[in-house]
Image 1 (cartoon, chains in turn green, orange, purple):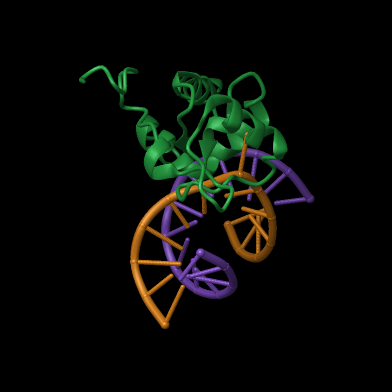
Image 2: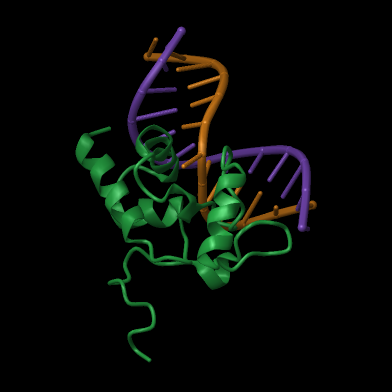
Length: 106
DNA sequence: GGGTTGACCAATG
DNA sequence: TCATTGGCCAACC
């Protein structure tokens, strides 16, 4: 696990727009290295200074250890939520490949 | 070097 | 929708 890899992960998380989320798998795919679990491991170790609550599991459910704080952030950012309490991944997902302006084309 | 675990993912019943 | 299974990559004992 290189520091460079960590920097890449944090960089992507920082680019997630307000009110949107991304998944560990998408980050792993974007980096094209290691796997989703390593992204999770990086977040666990170095995810402090970045909006870690915008990174969720593939189905939109909150990852382990995301306490009530994450939920409060979703409410504050108006992130689409499901009745289950998880994020509405289909509506809120953001692709790391996206250049940053989700609505720029319309 | 082998077994287990982890902020995971996808397929299957 | 939930639980189980196999796969994935790296770290730890």
